[in-house]
Amino acid sequence: MTTSENTMNMLSAQWKQHMGAAKIAWGKLTDDQLMQTSGHHQKLVGLIEEKYNITREEAEKQVKLFTETHIR
Image (cartoon, rainbow, N blue to C red):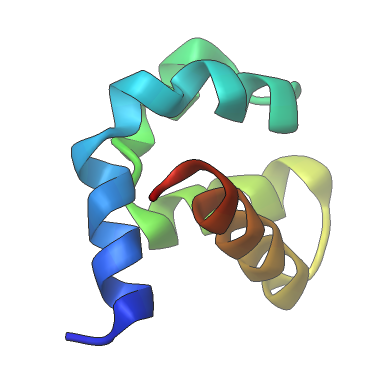
């Protein structure tokens, strides 16, 4: 498992702790939507892509930055 994959898995494991920060980062997402992703990387990317009408690549960058900032 790569460091990036490990960090993404840690986001899922610690998701409830980071939902507040996610709500600040992506204010268009509801608490229910954030809960439904359970911190799963691809679900979160897809939701951000859809709600913010941005490219998948941009959504990936945002989630990667969020993960790097909040998971240690």
